[in-house]
Image (cartoon, helix red, strand yellow):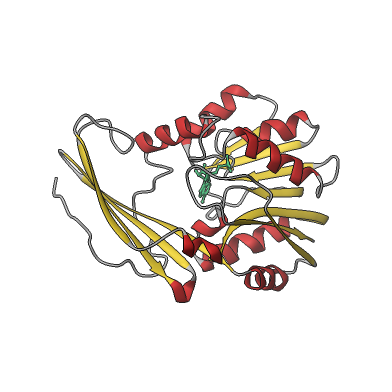
Length: 269
Ligand SMILES: C[S@@+](CC[C@H](N)C(=O)[O-])C[C@H]1O[C@@H](n2cnc3c(N)ncnc32)[C@H](O)[C@@H]1O
């Protein structure tokens, strides 16, 4: 099999065939990270999960249907089910959904891509936690927000978090490499990983580009991180039709994996 290294600056919101969440081996490593209660990789650490749930409960109806977009292995869905909500979780990481389904039969889990095939049904609350909104292109975000809005009952709320502009203080354009002679996070066998970070300040986005080289193949991944000014995200939500939009900051304590500069948004229909 031929090996290629892609060294150029990606076009804005360029997509790759390989995806860190749907790659079978990496998806499994992601699941392990989700399940580490003391680490902020893939899911926030346990204390932050608890604080986030307490925050969300203040803004949603005491009962009803709740949809978790990008639910991972169900850290949040399980808590909301225990609080009496009718819970649906969707995620395209097979390993996470398999784990979630095995653990809870009383929660509806969907293995799928919520951008391509948005889940049917009507909900009183829709949540999307850990800055996942920012991983999508502006076009995909707008498509998703329209679907979210249509699937909310009147009086329903969307709650999600995104990085603020202060993330630029934590991140810079870099190049890095990692050699793993006996395998590691990215592959079970020996690999070389070449990583690059690109900043697109005029579009408020970072791209993380990874070239993964193993003995017999190369894989190319790009992960996007879109950050927002408060007014920008508020205007986007109002343009979608949301009547009330409130921004909340300083909900969580320090993060040991990524930037601490997130804001939570509560948007009411
Ligand atoms: C950063 S993790 C957060 C998981 C979960 N919300 C949490 O905080 O524990 C992002 C999750 O979104 C999922 N995801 C990303 N894009 C998706 C898409 N288009 N459709 C379905 N799931 C997606 C990933 O597989 C991953 O489980």
